Length: 467
Image (cartoon, rainbow, N blue to C red; front, side):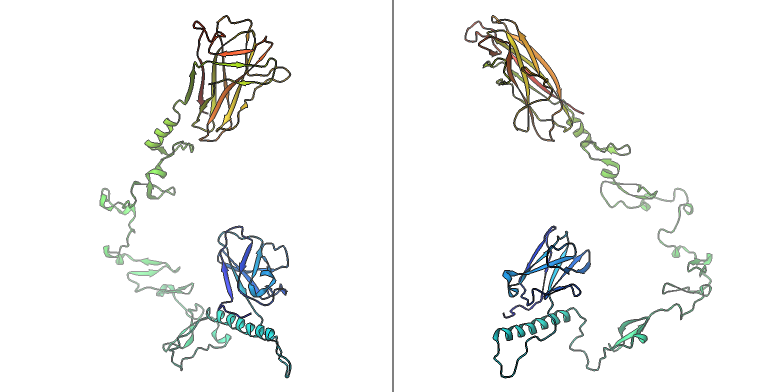
């Protein structure tokens, strides 16, 4: 191969959870694993996390945290490779670096045939080594080419340069500079010089200022004048009553804020909404120390307005039922839907059903529930044991002779739904101990085609009960 690129490394900032990093930098050795040198062949991987670099340890399979595995692309290192890691975290940076040993592995023998492939690889390794050195040079301190040739950049021995800082003299030569050494410089606090933590402090004279022996400055009476007062240095006890005007009060820079207690006994700007008032439509925080905004009070009151759905219908329909069967028939026009305002509410469902029948019998009714348009299923509360199972029943002991049978039922239900979902209910009917033809006439007697038949109205009412 020929190295057409000019770099020996590439960096990745993958998303959290990434386990594979593909790079196209060609390399030579894809098999040798050196744990001591943190290298897999010619490849090193550095992970930067929270500002700290870590060389990952190479393994041949199943890398865990702080490890990596290398495989050449299509088995050919000249095409690059794939780095496999355990997983990356958000913010991680990975640097894949080619690090070729500084050796010459191709030995030309006098009179022997030159292997072009081996020679090309040897030249590629030289270029790779130069790229490594160039990468290192770009990260070192470099002096301008215009510097005077007489400038010197050498430093003294480690003994001489100990406890000194690296700097430059007046001509720009590299030199060592002395640090402040409290051990070699003495000071007298009462005389005006004090040294602490490599900081030298001094007083001007002993008539206006002085040191207290602990590095603190004392301002003497003769040195206290209006011009010498520091900003914010006057305490409350030193201010005469009524001498603080509105112009001297702290400026409130943030709109919709007031001055108040910051929680530590100090005065600070306090936001009206957030620190003083809560704009919380549901008032779930139940704060005992913060008020509510007008908007949140209105939203809370509006939220708990009565939520009632009424399905009031007189449409007639005919339903043929199977005697003594658990097969129930849906009753037309009974499907009723409500959208609860609060996820924890209960629903009070009230039924008033009017119907006629040609024969007597026990008519059974089931309440069926659907959440957000899903499939209907009978609500809980059905009896156990054998027989036709229903939520409520009415016993018609004879032919209605154009009379109407009315049955009412009310139940408090606790459906499982989330905020914004709909809840629907409808009735289905069955019959037991009845005589043929087992027909139920909704809102009518069996003489539905006659002009003088009995007509009636049914209703279903659903009310949200807030909890």
